[in-house]
Image 1: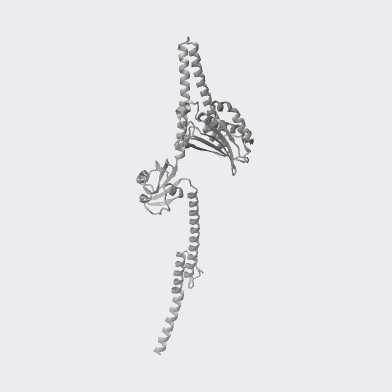
Image 2: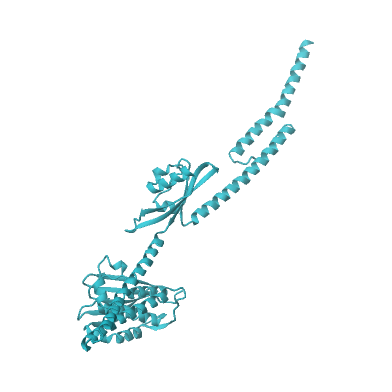
Length: 425
């Protein structure tokens, strides 16, 4: 009897153990597997959990948690994509650092600015970029918690000049008195500095160019007022000098007005089909006397396939007049001036070459700047305003073209105006 009772008890316990296993132990193993897959961002095949009501509720909760996790992942990915798009579209360099001066964020312009290749996030900035001013600026921003601004000078490996960078550092604050990092913006102001210098030089040059003839005219006028009985011979000499300088003033004013019109926003072109041969013949005829005065030989070399071009004929005449003016001034007696045209693809090249004084290699890159003269004393002696080649450059650019120069000291100069054959935009 006792053995029978003991057997019944064993069966009862075994049944209870099976019930407990199915209701409590087995479901939690399933739940553990669900949690592991959710942790690895892997969607489980099912969220149905065997067992009692509580187990099923846990499975349903895990399904909701996984759905929310997926939605958060999508939002984060979208924001990350948007952030990368913004960083990629930025022209300015961007750098983010934490409170310990470690890199948290960079964009491509910043990496190009300092010639970095995939800088590691988390790396100390001091080990990545070595620049005393930048280090000081970021350190002060992190220390004071205030926005800072400075200017950096960086060597440009592609040019002999320096690049000027405006740097702005803004602190990142977790709380009112807790600075957790900084965002630094790098804005290249090299071109702005260059334009400021050009404007400053332009004002200074205009003042200088006007001062000389005006002071001479004023001096002679005062002399004539003080000496009303000046002899006729002396008076004729003085008037000739005054006329020469007044003409120089007139030329300078005309060139300044022409340059101002070309640089204005409403500058336009009167386009038409220009016959190149006729254009060159007219210009040479206008310059016949000045060319003959120095016994200069003129050679016109026109390419057979460069007959017409769509351009502003009056502007092209101005270009050729300025180029011939320089060629005549800087040519030696019995020299040679060559006018050529050539078709290169969709571009026509108009060139004026001489075998005169030539230009040094140092001066050649700057000859199209306003008032720049390779030989200042010689240029003023010959009556140049220093604006002719600047006008040529602007007319070429208005046509959608460009200018080029080639020269060797003592062997002459060639100036080329390259224009599109079709209608410029």
